[in-house]
Length: 330
Image (cartoon, rainbow, N blue to C red; front, side, top):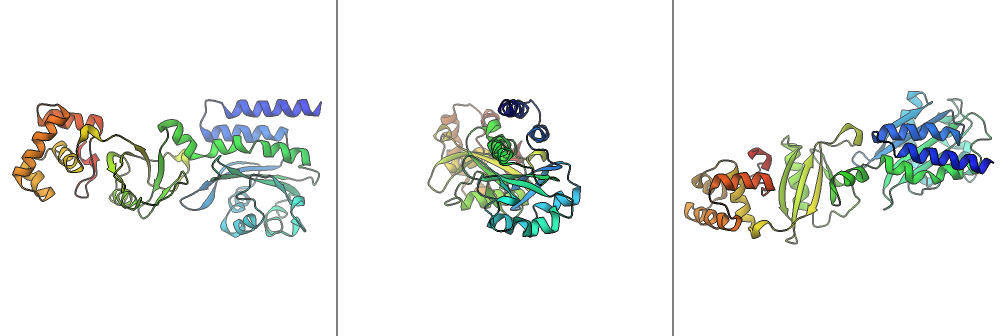
């Protein structure tokens, strides 16, 4: 009978996770339904912010605000790390901690003074092992969570992680690709990918954000010669990332077999520059620019500079030139 009830609650939680609501609203709905599994007095979900390298409160049911906001600050993260609570998707109660779990700083300074006697924590990880968040449940009765309740909560880890993972939500909207978070002084891969060979792109993204640009679209050529499409987006509050812009970088074919120099010319024409001004900007002769324009019109198969400018904006044939973002020509 108990097993059937548990299955019913798990099915209800799966349905709530699939509701056509915002990720935060679904997370709150799922956490509320988990009360049917664990009779918690305080329950919370915190999301990992890879930019600030800390956890940000997302959903709080039952905790007083100061306790919940303090629970995942740096003062206690080292203790969680030693317990394996940050990088292992295994639910852990205070009584599961080797030695005396109630001697932990977290219990002594936060949990017990708030009136709780037991609880559990669960690291929420993406399928690729990235940190996504933490589930915290606190009870006023030392009997809970039971072993069964702990194990059932652990089963819900992937569901909760999917709700909090900004990379997964961005991938749903924009497809596969590199995902970057950019501030005025740093750019980091959200998808956990390597920064090796990405110095020039990182510097360009930081430069754009520092100049007040948080939305743009342009072509890029990486250090190995591969062509890419870069889309910069202003982050929504729901993503909960402490950054100015999100960049989605995807492989793209070389457009119309245009060279990088020819794309620079296209971008400046789209800004409305005549050949003389294009030449001045690129440090080339007017004759050279005129030759570039003739070849570009042939490659793109348009008859005029106006047609070329329209095609460039419509198809994203723009690059960053002379420190100016391609958005300057929109």
